[in-house]
Length: 209
Ligand code: MD6
Ligand code: FE
View 1: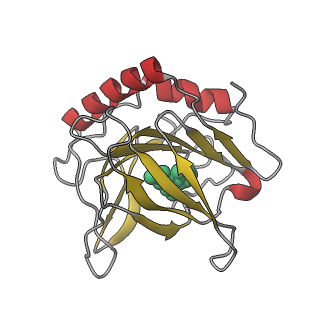
View 2: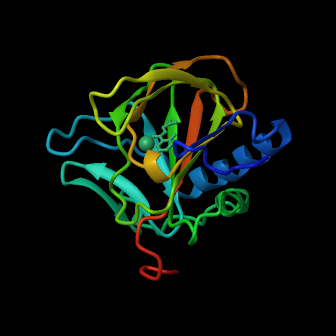
């Protein structure tokens, strides 16, 4: 399936990964979570817990706590380096035609009542590369806005196997998760939804593994 960005910088490819590929991805992500356990990020300053639990794979991982948002090379609780990004996700990133290898893959886990407020992905220094997202498990109600917080938003559903890419003019659009439609999939052990987002953090040629 073609992954080139639409004119507005978004590529939405429902069902990009079929059921068998989703099961393989889920097994690879379970391995990631076994070596880098899910943790609960906290809001900068207030320390309020996110409703989403997360981990990372790749040379860098995104973390958030009282000290702020940042990318770092180690897990905040175990102190270990993040495990490698599963091959199928690196292949997806390459299929998008991104100019350099991915440096971070965020793994977000949503239980039934978890949500993620409207945000921009702007903690990366290199924003020339797109952000590539894969959804697994329960369907999410996703909110997609514009590059300004006050821009109108629309709602769409992200189901297991769907791929969403934000690049070019859409790289900094506001987006979030309104809610999870519990019980819509049986892919994730114990239920819920997992979202994987692949990113480039540093400009090409810097921080190269
Ligand atoms: C989620 N996704 O789907 C959250 N960010 O659970 C994101 O925050 C996201 O899907 C950047 C690009 C695509 C995304
Ligand atoms: Fe995001």
